Length: 117
Length: 110
Image 1 (cartoon, chains in turn red, yellow):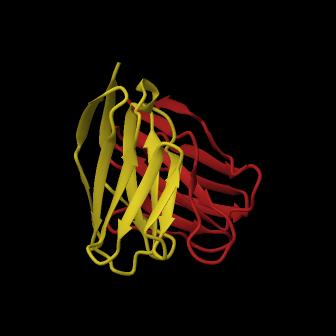
Image 2: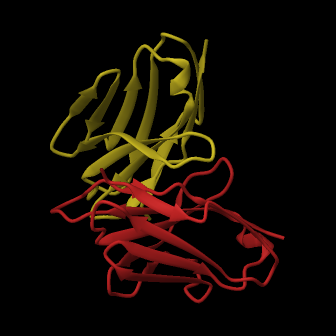
């Protein structure tokens, strides 16, 4: 159980393109989804937290107009990197947590490797 | 701000030996401490977790200890195997947000 699917796994595109990444919880309802960015050999840095039906909460230094997050249902959140540039190239990973009182484990997607030429 | 320090950054052990990774957190409100294993280019996978009302938890070759007073928690892997080679991340969480450590690259030498 607790499977999170993330698509696409790899994107290579030209500078200026907008890229949409989907994160789905397949067998549970995800009340909260998280978007992380991971540079090579570095830790996971939280970009934003999204709750179903409400606006995402962005971490300090993350541009909300650059990284658009939509959490339209309990099983789907999307991250759109708008007008992507080479410095946006990175590994983007989503995670989801289900319902429950107190802290619940986060379950991660497979990640999306974004390369902007 | 909230911070999690993790040591060592790299660790090489002989197959069969034990490996210990240590983390220190700053937010006293943290009450949940998961450990993740990440292989190259793959998703982090939860391997064990501990809550603040418990001092130690064990699952086969893996154990985690927590010292709330010192704000330390550690991962112990016994009888290491080559397939244990990966990057390990600790995290601390107060409500729902994780603060991850910087990661430990574990290499188990056959």
